[in-house]
Length: 208
Image (tube, rainbow, N blue to C red):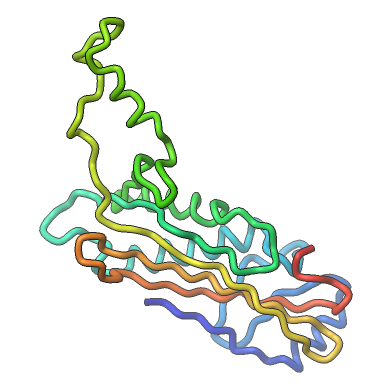
């Protein structure tokens, strides 16, 4: 489990913010942040999603439970509910897709697109079973019943946004929280939390 809570030196951050016109990442001793080069926004940009995803994958791969006991085969993972609890109109797939790509590249996880909380991400795998018994298709090439692989892990999570006033500034804290659950046992095999904090003028809103 990885938790990084920002150690906020608020006074120093406010003074630093006065030197610039745009929002800034807020950090303190012992904290990390996305690459600060270039301008950012009080909302979330591509660097924030990439950074949070990279931290999540590193955390997962460092866990001993990321390896299937007694096997070198990868876990089969399904994507469950991903909640956007911010004032932003964001697509949580911006976070999840990079996590999926990096986990697949690691060889530890394969994500099924045939099972999802609200139905399959790609319904074609099941749809092609309707070709069975069709005279138009060579039945040796048609996917058969009983060949799909059920998921073993479920990935769920939430992105939380909280806004506070700090003097004449606005501070926005974004919490990226993820859980991998063993479907057979219902036990959480991995927990993750990363916090990205930003500060900017009160005239600028977090959903910009």
